[in-house]
Length: 340
Ligand code: KG4
Ligand code: ZN
Image (cartoon, rainbow, N blue to C red; front, side, top):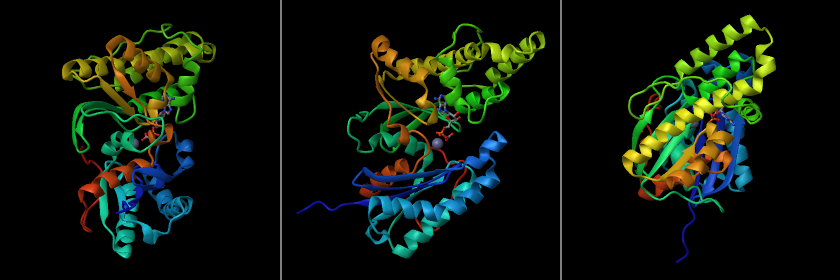
């Protein structure tokens, strides 16, 4: 008997990207992302504007995802959506839309935890990308998250370390603001860092217990440092921007890698996977590769489009839950602080 094809529509609306994706048996057919540019003018995500933009984008984005996948909505087997964590106003748009569509089509509704999805994005069927074997360690680094998770199985995960204040992407973006760069600043700091001296300006790393992270002290240290230097030389930033960026990047990567090394040592796990927008960073990628030589790690970095917020990762979790028959009720509610 021929295997039945399973089509899942995934919907992501937790922060400032409205995204829809169709996957067939774990392989992505479409992954449409509408990024909200409006927040750039404000130097950060404005929740009220984000939910309005989701409302505007959701129908065209879902329509495009179906069109690109060349399937009609009647062929879908289930609708998966991000239940949380995220901004409540944003989550409500995707949740309500997913509920109505599943109800109208009379197919199962599947709730997805956004943080699990960042990790399970590694299980999207993709040529030339290897999947991590269980157990593995996943480090999720983005503008909203910084976590190290021990992954024993698809849905058996334990957060073993996380930030106690800012996320790592926020550290990049706030540093960028101090330096007068645009928002978000991670990519530009990374680019400039590659031309600068990482040891030009040493910033102290925070002392945080166990496997947790802290980035707010670094931001303050950078602010005071820049204030002091620009007082002495008003052109300090322009004249030394590459070195400043390289020094910030060096400190941030040091913080991340120290904890990852500790996590690997404590758990004895050498399979290391990363995800989230900051995993695009050239320095973190190099540090992970070095870890393969130095510590015997095997590292896993998904295709770039699956590392940032996207619905492909929501759809793959939907597929895995569909196979287990793990469906949500129609009265399921969005949850801004949903835990793994
Ligand atoms: O995953 P993402 O697209 O959105 C969420 O925050 O959920 O991540 C965006 C974050 C921003 O803070 C941005 O500055 C950072 O990722 N980022 C980078 C790089 N590219 C994006 N940070 C460092 N280096 C990069 N190359
Ligand atoms: Zn995310």
